[in-house]
Image 1: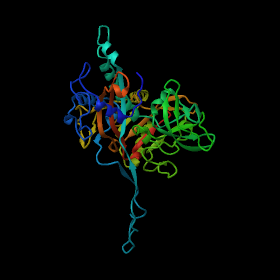
Image 2 (image 1 turned 180 degrees about the vertical axis):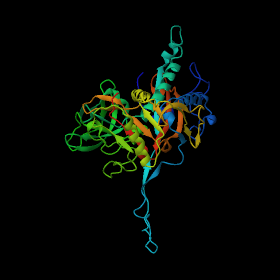
Image 3 (image 1 turned 90 degrees about the horizontal axis):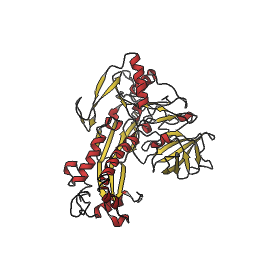
Image 4 (image 1 turned 30 degrees about the horizontal axis):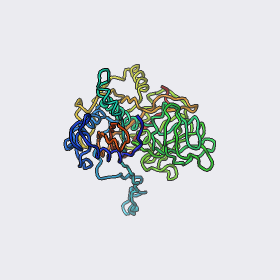
Length: 461
């Protein structure tokens, strides 16, 4: 069905103007059944939502999100709260702690330095629709039944996949071709880019970062061509072999975004992936070893290598040196199999643990619904996530999936609105006889300590 290209605000307004009842209405009467109630935008729980269908179908998707063995489910959920960010302590002051002799001078008084981090909710939307005629005919003999309900079920699954994919989206890739307003990457890594993201790039021939801040406007999933605003900077256009990387996300801030640092060697070249409002090398606050850079970013200059246990052990050490404690290993299905083979040979893959999920200040008891069982390495749970991003070699070959080690105490999914379901049957506004639906989730991934995230890339599949 054709895309009507309306904004989220207009879609909701049309839904509120729609009239219920009729042959395809869920409940007779205006503004009932499938529409927002007048108090929808107040803070509320599902038990307080007056609209049965908004609550039922939205809650179904939200519950599915929280019962899948993926990274989203492994991170605690918290209410958004009265905040748009937090502060990171970047310096404790120089020489204010030191030994003092019996009659020696006291240390000079100094102050801590802090950096303000801004974090805003991200709106994740999945739409679907059918024509009025198609809905009527589908109920006849030989039809699929309720076509709208079938599309609703498919869209709910797509919404879950979208959120999981955004949370694990890769931040930087080698391009195979480029123009002043587009770049081409492998179709297998296109999930890491979304319309509305902005990108910068590393110019290999000029050995310089180009801050174009070009917004993505279209993505061709067949050819891998991503259309953007102007990429040209100082007369330089992006070209094959250059590195494209995320300057800001339109969707969720991903785990790979956070586990990065300035000039990480992606595809044998450099990248400066941003997260939140962290600047790049201009202020040097994502340089290796700083609070806003990953604890360890282990690339191999765009050359594939096999996973080894020392690589994982180095992640644990780096996180502990920053004052964290590794609590979760995330890897793709390919690396999960490799790790399984490594540990079985040494008869070390023997423990299974009940992974405990946090919700606000509460934690699930081991074995209760909401937690899940995972294999472990050195007592740390291993979570196989099918949406883990893949690396690309210096020659452009897609390699295996990356591995991440997290101290999950510093990660949370902040929830402004859990998944909501809205139907829209305003035929006049759409200027066509169509039934439309929408799933909306308003959340963001927060990481209060990026320096407790370790990232291993350039692995063979």
